[in-house]
Image (cartoon, rainbow, N blue to C red; front, side, top):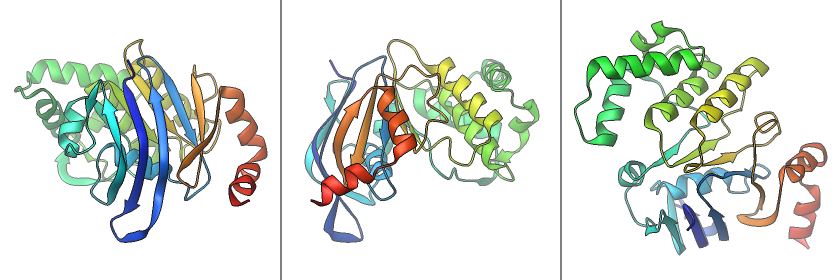
Length: 251
């Protein structure tokens, strides 16, 4: 059984009901798989990620989203997250006044519904920070406040390891990162990945994909998946771009 199955999904923006962003999108991801979504700007990649999590800025007009055999099409975002769906952001938010440690404690308690053991939680945070080569002093800093772009992205991978969801949606996690930061993020992905969870990576390039065991690459044009293949398809797009698909879609 698929972990995530999207059937004939159509989506419009809350502030523009005249044009569909997703146009009959179908996608199936099995447990243990890494899938990649690639496409030009404006093709609907981030809309897809936000629609899976039921961001109210995007309205589903048709279609269904099934997760672990359950229809989550109309579930609220918090309930979808508690069922095991994690999403990173292109631009992670800052939360002044809330420390990293307090945020992670609240996150853990909200996900499990149980009061966290402070000692165990601190040890888990420290262990995961060490794995990601993060300075332990970060846990006492305000959440993402004053962090560099690379630090914020590594912090999201820390959250991923702490939450250990069934499905991780990584929306351009490699954007703006240097080679060393990409390597650390990739190491975090490999630490998280196992035979029962899955990853959906949204990206423009091969930087993050190189060396990962990618099961399928999907090309998204004008809200539809127009091509699929293995990692060789991503390499081809990285060198040749999307002109072929855009021209075919306009004819």
